[in-house]
Amino acid sequence: MRTFVSAVATVLGVLLAAVAVPAIWLDRNIVREDGFVALAAPLGKNAEFQQQLATAAVGTIDTSAVPGFLSDLVQPVLEQAAASMAGLPGYPAAWEETLRRSHRLSFPQPGEDPSSAGPVSSLTLDVAPLVALGVEEISTATRLPLDPPGETLINVGEPAQREWTERLATYAPMGYLLAAGSGVAFLLALVAARRRWTVLVGAGLGGLLLAGLWAVGAQVGSAAALATDTGNEVANLFRDEFVAAANADFIGWTVAAAVTGTVLLVLGIVAGIASRRRPGASR
Image (cartoon, rainbow, N blue to C red; front, side, top):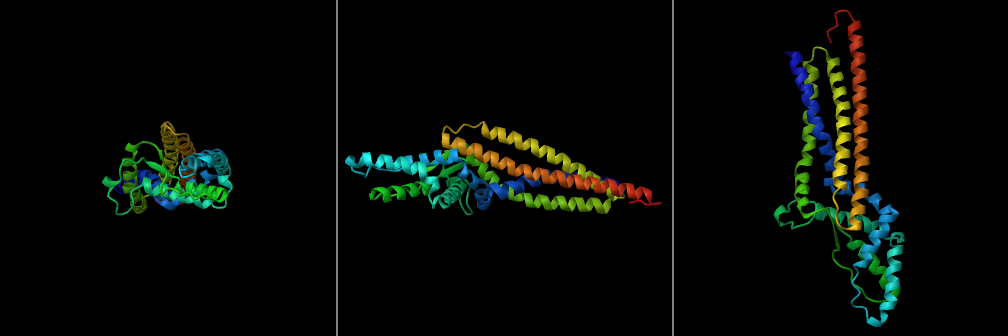
């Protein structure tokens, strides 16, 4: 009976861990604003993305208040602002604020009624901080008063994907409870086991199996995300870079799981060999 309980608890621990780890990763890196910003911030250093994003941001600047006879003066300044925006001192802060605004638009905030969110996509870039940076540069160069917009949206994905962000925000934090349950299950398995080294071996094999499954799942999920065309070059480039960054970060977690599984497996095998060499050892 003890062996049966130990085996069931070990399997349960592995199954709970299979869901808990991806859920915790999603909560830390996608659902939480700080994690999302940390994951996406390096995208702003991609030269191609910088240029396309700056061009798109500057292209939304309203110059209708500029007198017609000055239009020839403004156009070169617009082009220069787009070309040099990434080098401006305020660019890193504007890019970070863009990410924070985008996250707040794309994920339901605490106390927000999901039904009132409106038809926004799973990720909506609000590049207004970058537009404001361009407006400031243009106003300084031309001495013309231009007002930056309150928001400038670039949709990434489809409106129907909003439902997925709501589910993610609701269920991803449950990964911590599942992880705790997995730990309790493994503890029960150790307490109930007649040969505790078998629990270590089972947990190690489970960790290696999960690492492989997570790696495959990450590749499948990345391929599915990349197959979605947003219809916008800037959005497509952001999607490509963000998916690559997310995949690389999660692969780090799978490697850690594989290393942990290997260590547990080796410890279990060593403990098993040692127990067999001890006369009358049952554990």
